[in-house]
Length: 435
Image (tube, rainbow, N blue to C red; front, side):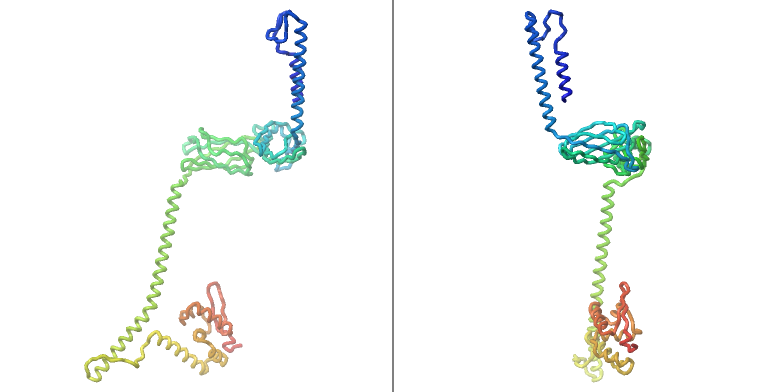
């Protein structure tokens, strides 16, 4: 700024705004010149020059004071290759600084020194840096990096930046006939995944271009009107790579996915409804099976009463009349249960006669009805069985059976082995008198 001000002063001294004039004639447009009094005109001209000089000096002071009030910080950046950790000696480096608080941008180009370093002055704050480095022999950019910098006022920031090798990519999207497709949607899957501004659609000519793309393999996918395609490009550092994507594969539209989802939901609901109906039917069948023995018992009672009445009439030779049966034994559910208890008692009596060892006989006397049923069932089935077989053979409900097993196991009458969902139940050697 100071150098520019001195140039202004020099220009004011050398090239004042006077047009060429004939000697002895006052210059046109000169407000301080008097053709009748040349000496007065010369004095007025000198005063004008002094005024302009003072005005310029004041501007120099004001600008210098403003620059002094704005603190700057020095930043020194060293550039290295992220793969080889070697110093980058590119011919030209392009830098874009964006102030993340104010939104202002600074763009400039600098050469690198032999040590791969460059320096610059910035005001304090948070800055986003986008940097590209280019070797002059290559046609495209060779390196790229993006980083955030936090600069404190008056400090010196020294930082090493590791740059990624990059190249450029151009491509086009065509249909199965080779026609270019404009407005096709694009998707890039490049490694490494740099934070770059990839194109999301082809232009109206059906082409796209990436000025910066990471060196390596890059898969490009495209979609248009329910057709998709993809191609893989090999991007070379500092070079331009070309790729063509042909849309040949059909893809389901959003409506097709909606129909498919509705069909799957319908099948699922039908399966659930069918399962519910089937389960309900099984429950009804169980209820009917429980009611059937009671109906059979009632029918047997009525038939027995009828037979007894007819027999009495035939013996006495009397006319049929109503006969009340008071002492006849009819098998009702209660009598069936009593018969089972009697059978159990008979089994205990048989065991008392010498089929069991003394210890087993003594223990059997201490067991309740359900525990005795389980022990008797195991004695008649080679001393071992499964939980399901015992439940079916004794008719004991599952919950009651589990409690009975626990009691018998605590009394050392049985031992239980669980294999997955299968439970094996076996009489212990101690109960059988073997140990």
